[in-house]
Image (cartoon, rainbow, N blue to C red):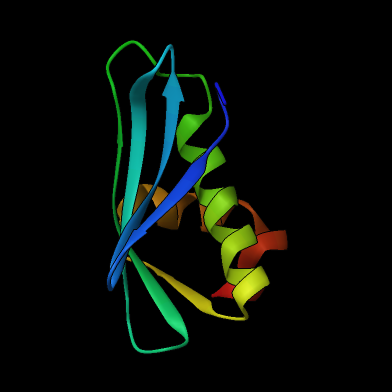
Length: 94
């Protein structure tokens, strides 16, 4: 699935990621905080992928995940927080 954010959960933490040409190009990590919240703590996009929107794609995947599970997001990562600040229509999961 090139250019599409995916999700992997490992215990009480996980990450959203984007693969292209069978190589991970971007990743956004999170941890579960209890039963009803995830904390996004880091976003990283590989060099050469700036401007492709990968970071925002991963935030939007996190929003979809939160809405589907009925949980909230605490964006401690400065990048994720900036996306929430600029996108009022996704703030329902904060």
